Length: 447
Image (tube, rainbow, N blue to C red):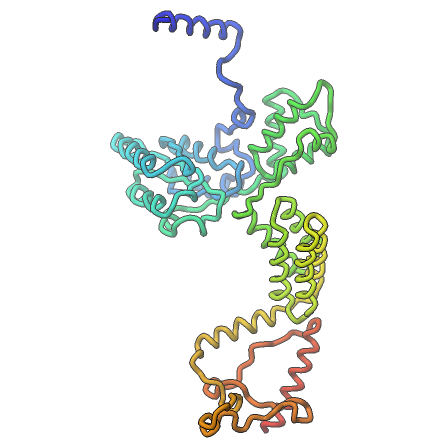
């Protein structure tokens, strides 16, 4: 088929599609069709786009500096970047750190320089900017400093840990929040308005669908499409039917990223705050998301020694026993042992006295690491050492009526120190009594 004949055939095909009222392009997903066309249509980010939001104030001055958008997936980072370019009349250029290398960055910078010479600025949007290595991140610095580009980087990871300090110092970090229930409901209502039909869900199922979205606007609209595809004419799903139809979207949780650290932090602080119910909730979320139960067991051991310590010496025993029980039983039966340990440590009396004492002792030891112990507590296995006074004057505690000699064991140049200060809680109340008793005896022996 020659080129002229081929062109005529293509035009004929296009005219047939047009006559039938059909488009040749594939149907666009609902999330794409509902993408906001103005910043006012963005939902769930009032802290930065509301009347007093950071971006709102920037746009009022018609001045836009480089930015880092930090937040979970589906919160509007890419959309807001594109709309910012429109609002400030900058050329929008997008690259992804997942698929781009040094050559791609050079091309983007050269294109931005060419536009600048023609009086046009560039907003360079870099998705997953944290995936660039240190050298690649440093390559942005000159073009940010001379105004060649306004950089807007998007990341789901904590910029403090993942981005170079030099890059962070030249950009403002704006935090995008997961969409709350009200924001997800707005997306549902907008989808129903555009489609001209209601979601086939009862009240409970609709609330369940909101929770399944997990604060992700893109996921919310994808779920809406799945519901409409699944429903037969006149069918209305309840919550149980909805879960069966959608097979529930997995929680957003990356065991190597922020979700992991956020939830283990929430679990630890719930235990420290003596809230067993909240602690069990975060434990269940992490297990449901596929967290390694032995990682959780190790963290519970850490909680037992850091936040409970000697206020309840059994806490460490229970935490270790839970780890051993999981090793023995495996999942899912062994998870109950971990849950039991979480309840125990959450309800145990709390004390960080041992933790603080050890930290204080380490600091003093670091600054005074060359001091020798007093000679009276050193052994003297040779005559030379005996002649040098090693072991001289040592009092054997068991030879005293109280089993306590009251001697000073610190280096003479350092003097007596106090690190451990047990509170009047749990078993440490008894330890406090012992320490006070020994202090009185020591005072009597040295006076």
